[in-house]
Length: 137
Image (tube, rainbow, N blue to C red; front, side):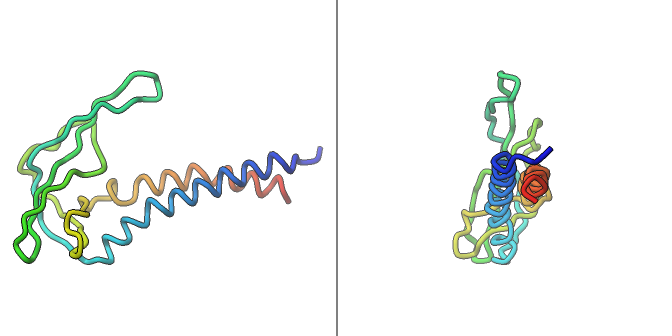
């Protein structure tokens, strides 16, 4: 049975789109690491948000709000873009990566905040890309 070239192209498109999204997501992490702004910060509170879930309801997530000082002594407060199911206790010490040119562009330096979402997005797209390439060959 011959492979359907339209289906192969669609699968390739989905796979390539996922890889593109993963590249966009990883770009910020790489930029923050290259900027070489690093400081010790502390969680001052957790912002609570209700996020819609795939089951139709919503789930509560807590996004750490972190305060740190730049090498020039400027105090910066930011909210992490990655939430958890449990609040991070206030006073928790964290390593912060930031761009010294724009210190408010900061993130907590953990695998989850820097690499998890790009990795999952890329891994999601790889089977589509592989299936599409196989169908087109």
